[in-house]
Length: 563
Image (cartoon, rainbow, N blue to C red; front, side):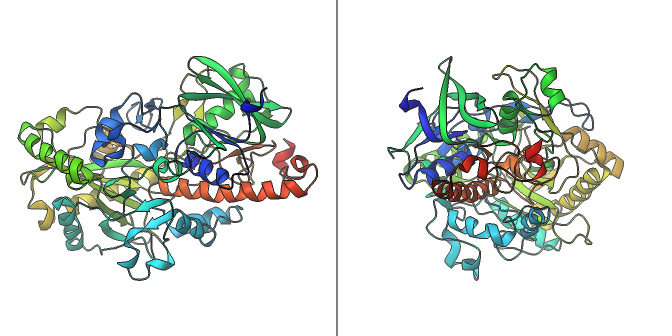
């Protein structure tokens, strides 16, 4: 292996977490870092224009376009899972909502044996990664937010009038306004902070790779799909990947880091012989390490909608009567980076409880100013209607799914079973959320824009009818996590330093390590995880210089290491 094919750190995946690691690990100039990304560079201008979200999410080049297996509790439907396939990963195709989750989420992780992951432990990393523009406008924001970080967090430069009406309607229904969902408290309704700078998307690629990509010790290779982790015994020593139709190999002097997301990282482990022994044997994959938790513990937020037809025409539509407005908005964006095309669509929402007895919010709302169109897979409704939609998701589902190999072919997609609505609790919470969403949508401030409820519709009233509607129409809100769970129990895949149990030289750093879903959108937590992981990796590198035989000294000492 030539010197040019050997690096200190080799990162699989240039998504939200991989971008952070590439920046932080190369910052000192001391370490040689390679970042491999399966998709193309983030050069498509529609990525950077917030209003370009529909064509971006429909793109075959920028989106993995995964599908689940038929979901038995959702009418036997396979369900569409878009995931970013470009530098920045899903931060390059998402709705840019900046939400951390609830403080309790991280304290819960710590209570499960994950030392160093409590809210007070992770808050400094959230602050470090931020350049929080509204910091001087929000009393007390300094305690929760940061200045000068790479990720720009801003208030919207443009606000659709329906968003203001939603907040007013929610107040009429008894909900309080919250000016900062990432501050002292989460409950309430309001306008979401967005990951944007000067009216343009601030993806993790823009935030972290743009200032770092010219460093001589950082190499970024796009259109390079990782196929396998290479091992010598129990130590990861490199990666095999496909570039230009040919297999290539690269070596890692120090560590291999998987940052391919909640789908890609467990898939790579399984392809590499790390996972449940019997499953790997079924697919003829040579066992490297029996680790039963790989691909288990899959969690996702399921979303259900209430849609009203809009007579005020404040909503976004592809109807011919909207084309002049769209052209005007596009020109305004191109010349000033202002106006409607800076909108992230889901501009307003909030957090509420499905039951007043709940100790913390367990439902989240996103209001979007258009008709629900099945992840933009079918644009026909947008050509027909002006409408607005309130999406409701249950934040802490009890259902757990799995990710498994469909084939030992590294280029074949994995088998994803989200196992949605496996418990009555998950379904009942969505029923309550749907009822409350309807109540808010019917308040005067919002109803004055509307003609009538389009979905679920007047014929859906009883709890059983609502349950049936949820089973037939609920979809992902794009937050899969948990498939390489962090912890010390038998189902854990990584330890609290994100090292894979029982192996050396291998970590997983992305949303797959979350033991449980956070109460909110997942891009900001995934960024925080990578910020903290970079510190852990650099701390271990400093120790390695002083400790002889560091590979043996740093191996996990718990029972999982003996498996």
